Image 1 (cartoon, rainbow, N blue to C red):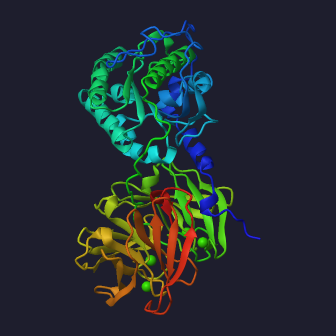
Image 2: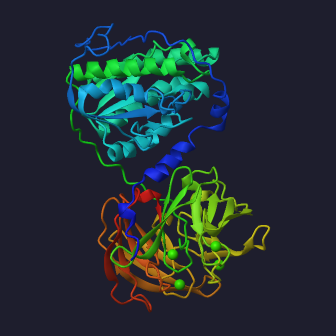
Image 3: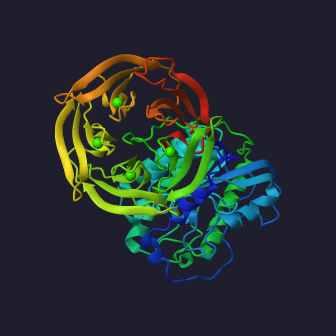
Length: 554
Ligand SMILES: [Ca+2]
Ligand SMILES: [Ca+2]
Ligand SMILES: [Ca+2]
Ligand SMILES: [Ca+2]
């Protein structure tokens, strides 16, 4: 009996918790080393709305428990940085648990939602993040989590790092606009920033805070359900360090968001269900080659998180063809973000290795000894210093059939410069083969490397707009045996929100045609063998999806 845990049936909680565990940056952790709990005073309830006037409660709200508002459903997304995460609070939950308890009597169903999972007080609080970091991710987080209320507190790191402080209000405005465009009926509460104990940072905070009510009012006047929440009840005495509230500060934040939400509900802002636009299509980084971690010749399904950690599902043939085996977390990450991670076998043991490709094209390798818990990873250090070409042009593929992935620089015009792998820097060097392909006129974004004819040498594939794949098999490459034009070998009608990849699913040594959907599901056409000219067999959906497609490597 095979494990029935296909990618589609696996919850993501484990990997997400792992992401959360890394959230405290060392610098922050150091700052938080001393406990400076302030007096827990009477929670202030200052709430100001620029317009319209508060219908439920005035500037001084009714005492807790006396507000009678009720909504059918609240799915609340706390959104921000380490202050939303809860750094500095004794529970690690910041304002979230207190707010959840206050809201519970007011909603038939109440959830806190977000990709950071913490015991029912889930959120999108990301330590150290700037306004721009939220902008890069919010259009993906919203449809994944499905909130009807977003609570936003962001900008502290921009202030602390003096990151274009003058431009910060405009960046906040753009973030607000992203949310309202994604979900016009969303209730969005934007708060001013809690203070800093650092005088210079506090000066920036005050300047930023002065702009927030205007940003909110402008959107409110256009009809969006955006409200302002004043955090001025939190004073420097409510901080545990120079940036983060202590428990009394977080209690005041909970009160302020509670009052803001009460006003929003009283205004009829809160919609039980809101339509959220699907996340925009996003492609996984290119450059992986033969992502087989188990050395059985079948490509495995890996999910790479932002922190570089890897969850593996080993391919037993795929759904309906042998299922997948959940290997759990096989790598915890190296500190490099997931978008710098690549997989390719650099040492000819059949197991894909963990590579960190820096922006300058240098490569740090950890060879695969089985992965965490099954033999670990061996740090090989820097195996390539780069060629001057940026990471965006670097692909890995075995072009000479020695089962060691080679280093390719693919120019925008499709030409390829290859360095064959002799062990890598400090392990036997690289051999410069010069330009091995001059390109076909198709841009680099359309080029894939995969072994179509099973001779172990990576072939040159070009995706056509109509879904056809043009194949040039590798006969050694230009100047070393040329390329053989095989014409169009496989065609599949293009679908929006998908990416096309090639991987050997059934272990016959020939790359198959994969459609990877934005939800991580995979449809496969299997290579008929020989020269690839037969009928590619439709295996249908071999994975139902364990993570967004751009996180999936296969
Ligand atoms: Ca495998
Ligand atoms: Ca290897
Ligand atoms: Ca090679
Ligand atoms: Ca080949």
